[in-house]
Image (tube, rainbow, N blue to C red; front, side, top):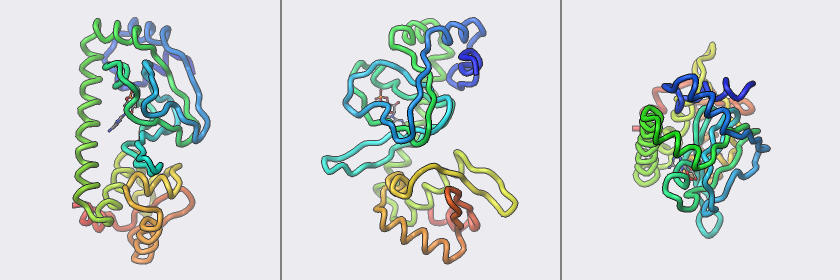
Length: 226
Ligand code: CMP
């Protein structure tokens, strides 16, 4: 696809004029990342903004023992890298391609010039950043106050909400995440996740086929997520 039409699909740029979109297309580079490739590490220096065109990335943080928590998954049309771009500090988290990823990259100066001249763009960015802050507040609430059932239910419902589809026998979501990554997204151990998946499949709440999670009893998950 031409860069022009890629740029047009990004919600961050939704309210811009055609001439601005052309300009953005001219100042962006295209980059691809293989499945599991690290886009950058937390604490790296970095100034570019990335806009995801295809594939999924995970934003994660690690402790000294390399235990990882996934803060957020991003999908096509989402951007990342704005924090270091704006405040000039190091990258706040590690970003990794969950599957094959194509991204557009804009360097700091060019993007700041654009932000200064287009208040729509600034507003869209602020809206996206405050939406993420809300989601992070929710995540903290879940990690600190929920038991493993609550963490499980919230994460599965979150995946369905962001990427789910309606099938003949109910909602489902396809996810390229490994079991380890799913556990890191929930903030539970791999063993706890296996136990919960077994329990919920036996009681008919879920069905898992390959990379697809079918939701058979959404009301039960909603109740656990409260
Ligand atoms: P930056 O700090 O440059 O590099 C890591 C990126 O991950 C960061 O910019 C944001 O784009 C993104 N990021 C960091 N924390 C979160 C979060 N809690 N929710 C969503 N995205 C985040």
